[in-house]
Image 1 (cartoon, rainbow, N blue to C red):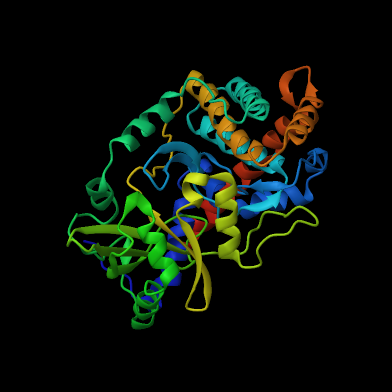
Image 2 (cartoon, helix red, strand yellow):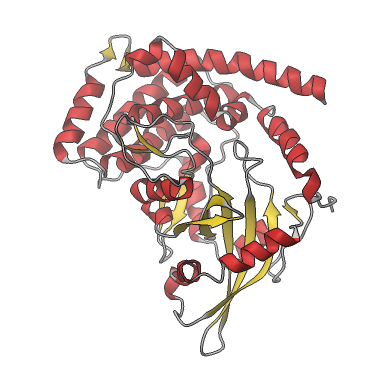
Length: 397
């Protein structure tokens, strides 16, 4: 078993781990470097051609790994956006560009020809526009990568979550590679947090739990998880519940520090000033399955948000795409994002946004020129930055 990391060593270890994760592949670098994406957006001439869509909640970090099956409070599963840390009221075109970059990067990682990327961008727009026409209409046939992870999600129970996340169904979080020891101050602050009525209510809201149940913290640990967020506070909390009849249940709650978003907000937009409240508001607008089981709070004088992890919550992990599956996945996932956007718009706003999208198609590719040129330019910029990152990491190591 790996040696647990001491509290005083955390930040240095996390910095090294983040650099290592981003050096694994160009796609991992894209996923872990949201700031570079928005730096390009602020400085590129191509980005000036991006249309200004309706001011709605956007994901802000809309890449392949941030979509997947999510369960609602009753356990019903749907494919939705699963990470809203960067969510702001902004331009929906930014989510489209970032998703296109992620899909193109995944295609390159699968050694697919460039023409496949062109078809992916075309199908992205078709899937997204279909959602604008009817946000309640499903996208149609699921690609294999989505179908497989959905089936796995539907069959999962608490024992699967416990075995995957904490290594056992026994009521203890094992310290080691993923989970690190808390300081006495951290443990005390978490105990006080779960004594709050609103936190207790959030835990008891799921799956028809008895409102009179006693809620207590069984165990807690610092959680080494994520990539772009490595270094922010992150805790796993194992919670026990005992109802009035003596029945017992357990839950695993994720506590995560909410950092300021690097995504640009729409001019004049009004969002919660607290970053945790902003993330929760974005989740409730974009991913209702997730948003209804989240809560903003304060811990150690930091803004955080809490969510109970459900066994059905999974991310889409793509090691290899075939050309056909890559194109199908592009359409399907863009439709998922389109539904999240379209639910926030009235009929006229959806029609106008669709006209704005359709008005910039080019003859050579059935997609807006600003989207295609943005993805091509970003791919070039990220490939070079990724190689520089690997060189710096190798020299440092």
